[in-house]
Length: 300
Image (cartoon, rainbow, N blue to C red; front, side):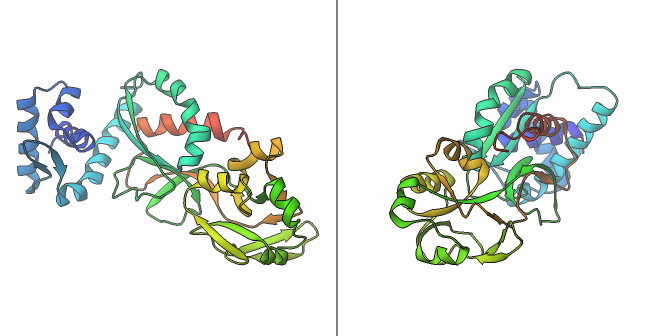
C-alpha cells in the first residue's frame, strides 16, 4: 500500500469527508474515491462507511487508523530528517486537554501559534472528561494526572501542586481548621474522582486527607464550576494551584492549612500514543506549549 493513499485515509477519517481530504492533497473527488477503494481492496476491509449524506469510520477503520497515522508520521519524520518539509507544518492535529486549564492558559496563546503555522489545523476537544487517545485518534493530550499507561509517552509540562482553599466569607462564618482532622467539621467541595492522600506539615508530621469526609454534599466534575462554587462560599475545596492562583493573589480565595503540603504524584503531562513517531505537527505544538507555559509557569 502507498503512503499517499494512507495519508488520504487519515485526512478522510479526520474530516469524515473523502472529497475534502482529496482536495487537501490536490486530488479530484473521483480520484480520491478511487484511491480509497483501492486501499480498502488492499487491506480487505471497508474502512469508511459511505452514504449520500455522510461518511463514518467502520470498526475496521477505527482499528486501522492508528497504524495508518503511524506510517504517515514516520514518513514525515524521515523527510524532516533529510531536511525536507521543514518550512511549513500542515495537516490536522487532534488535541485534548482539561477545559479549565485550556481556558486559562492555552486558548489565549493559540493566535500566536496559528500565526506561525497557518497550514496546520487544530482540532481540539476541551473537557474535564478524559478521552482515550487511541480510540479517539488523538495526536496529543494534556493530562493533570499520574502517567501510568504503558502505551503512552509524555513530556512533563509543569508541576501540579494541590492546595486547600475557601472563600473569606466561608471562613469568617465557619472558622479555619487547624489540622486535617478538623476538616471533618466543614463543608467540603470535591471532584467525583478525588482520592484520599497524605498531607505533610512543615515540621514533618503528617495526616491523611479524605475529601469525602465531613459534609461533602457537593461533588462536581467540571473544574470551572468547582472553582465558582468555592468562590461563592460552598465550602473548602482542593484545587490545583494553577487553577486558583489569581484568586489567591487577589484575596478572593484563602489557603486553608497552608502549613501542610498535599502529597500527590500528579503533574501536567503532554502525552501521545507510544506507537506514534513524534511527527512534525505534534513536535511544534508540544515545543510551543513547553516554551510558553512550561518554561516559567505563571502560577509558580
